[in-house]
Structure formats: structure tokens, C-alpha cells
Length: 249
View (tube, helix red, strand yellow):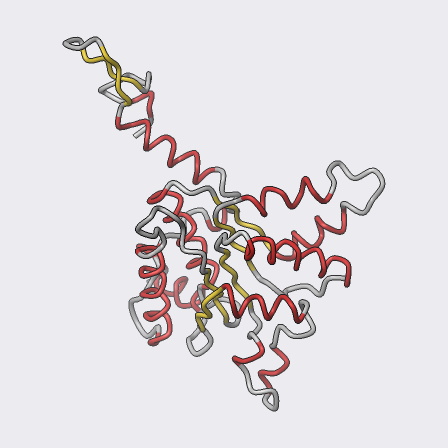
């Protein structure tokens, strides 16, 4: 409900109890705050409609998507600890393009913002690498600290398409500092990647070419093992293709 349309407070956000002459927050206030939090996540328009409720599980989607959806539900349910602290563990969705990894990561991020009121950020890995490199320019409009601070301080961050671009050694070090900083501060991070963590693929197989090793620092891969639960989505068909086919039936 939009605050301006609220039949109780007429957009003021407060309701005055005439009997006690005291004001209290209208219920529409919480809805507006949750809406602003979602708007501040930085999710691209393409993914703003992603929710767990519209993640298509009908048809021949395979057990992996069902398991991935259940893992996301469980992660959200267990996100807030009994003492009010956040679960410091994250998730890393791994699999080829078009399998629904970004849909799930975004859906989890939105649900956390709406359900728990946490602040979060979505960032595309390739764009992040380019933005870090741009800060090296003498006339850059912002410095590296300005770029990284919102990502370091956000309660939850989604890093989409990790490893999609090979960064320079200096940018790699900067990325490690960012991710390691979140790890040390116990702030959860969600990742998606087309590339396996080193233990997910046989080094002698064709899948070895899809390892993250060589695309991000080995120290970052080590951190990923400690800070995020892998969710494999590599044995299913193209989720986007199946979704489009379903929509046009």
C-alpha cells in the first residue's frame, strides 16, 4: 500500500489516538520502509521481478532446482539468529548460464530485505572490475574507497557472475580485500558463477576449464569455501529457455 493511499493515516505515516492524544506509527510505514530498502538494493530492471514464488519449478526441471529452491527457503528461514544477529554464512550458486542462478540470488536478497529489513546491494562482477579500474584514472569522479565502502558496509551483498572477467593482479587484490573484509566482519555474501570452485570439478576433465582458479585469486577461492555454501545447478536444462517456452504456450 502506498502511504498516500492509506485509508488510516492519509499518507501522514502517523495515527493520533484521540482518547489518549498520542500518536503511533501507521502500519503503512513499515511497508514503505521495506519498499525503500528493496529500491536501494541496486538490482537491475531485468531482475527486479525475481521472487522465489515465481521461480518456475513445473515441468522437467530436475532435482537440482528443487533442491536449490529448498536451500534458499531454508537460508531465509535461518538467516536471523535467536540473539538478533545475522547468519554470517552466504551462498554461491554454480552452473552454466541460463540455469536460474541470478534469479535465486536476487530473490533471496529481496526476501531478506522485505522480511528482516536488512540493507543490501547487488553488484555485477564485470561492472565491478571495470569500476575499480576506472578509479585509477586521475580525473575519476570517485576513488576506490567511495566505490567499495557501500559494498563493504552493506548487511548482505550479491556478487553476480563471479569470474566472468579476468581482472588485473591489482584489481584481484582489491577484490580480495573487499570479500575478505566482509568475511572478517561476518557479513554474508551471495555469489553466482559459471565456474566451479576447485573442488567441484575433476582437474582431469573438461570441466576443469570452468574452474575459478586462474580467474580470481586463489586466496579468494579459499575464502569462498569458508564463507559460502555451494549450490550446484549444472545438471539441468536451460532455465531461461524452459521459462520462455512455458510463457508462450
